[in-house]
Amino acid sequence: MLLELVVWLFIVAGATALAALTYLVVEHWHSLREQVRKALPYLGAGLSVVALLGLWVWQWWQLINLSRSLAPEVRVPVEIEALKIVPQVLGGGILLCGVYLTLRRVWALERQVEVAQEGQVTERFTRAIEQLGSDKLEVRLGGIYALERIAKDSEKDYWTIMEVLTAFIRENAPWPPKEGLPPAEGASGTSLEETSGDTESSESAPKPKPRTDIQAALTVLGRRSRRYGQGEDHPLNLSHTDLRGADLREAHLEGANLFQAHLESANLWQAHLENANLWQAHLENADLLEAHLEEVILGGSKLNNAILEEAKLQNSYLVGVNFENAHLLNANLRNANLKSAQMMEANLKGANLEKANLIGAILHYAKIDNANLKGANLAGAKGLTWEQLEYAYLDENTRLPDYLPPRPAGSSNEKEKSPQSIDSGPPTTESDEIA
Image 1 (cartoon, rainbow, N blue to C red):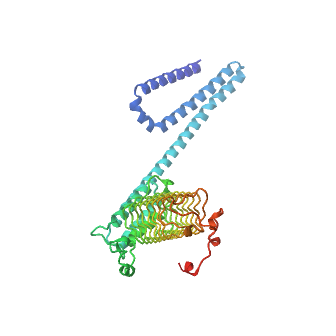
Image 2 (cartoon, rainbow, N blue to C red):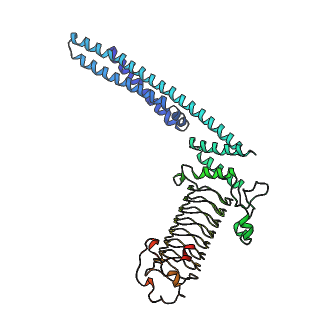
């Protein structure tokens, strides 16, 4: 009877405590919410202990009830077995408490290590920023490469470092150049367009290229592990920068903002500039061999004498671009918008211009042998002749300028053709090979 009374007292006390706890939680929920969040581990441990005690009480009670119907000589061993549950439960509870306390220590140590690492990263970051402002080139280079290492080690600081490096380039290599800044190596402060009139001086003058620290920052940006849209939420901002003669081979600048940037004579071989903003950029004499320029914005840009052989320019915005004397051999310009583009004497041999918009394009002396013009719109194009179109691939959807006379009899375009390799193109002459 005494044991039953203890059990009932335990049950009543537990129910009363639960009711009181529920009342307090409901009445003071807003003030207790933050405290409950902090005390959640302790609350979980307490509930686990209560559950274990409840399980023990339930098992003990079941055994006591069963023992009542047994003979005295059998009931006593059963009750003894029931009492053995007490140390088992207590031992299990102590073991769980020990495991929990051990985990708490491990968590605390991990947090201390994280805090220490964050402190080290912060210290390294601060020191690298200070190095960027040094007057010594070697110190600035050390700061740039230190920032690259931190960006690899600290995900939290990655984008901040990218912004620091792009800001460093914009401030130290702006266009137009600022007074008081060291000029780019071999730079005269004028663009190729401004010096084109003086041929002798422009050929003898050394080609400008970025300062060593600017080139180092560009290299770090170009070889970073993440890309815009693939781990980066924002594009790199390199607008209004002086990057003449920069080495950006295989650089990853997807989606970059290069608005009005000066990239004359830059090496962009196999560079990735997909979806980049190159509006009104200067790329005269730039090497864009096999560059990725899909869906790029190049409106109003200058690519005079640029090398764009086998470049990928499909779906790009090329309205008003100056391609004079540019080399676009085997370039892919499918669905590109080349409205009013200046393509005088451009080499478009083997280029894919399928469904391209060439309305109003200037094509005087452009070489378009073996070019795919199926579905292209050449309405209003200037300077186009049947001699240029003799070996180009046309179809019934190709729209030609109204001023062209009827197709000459015996023209190779009288029968339908399909684009093939350049080797199957027109017969070459000695003058063509020299060109």
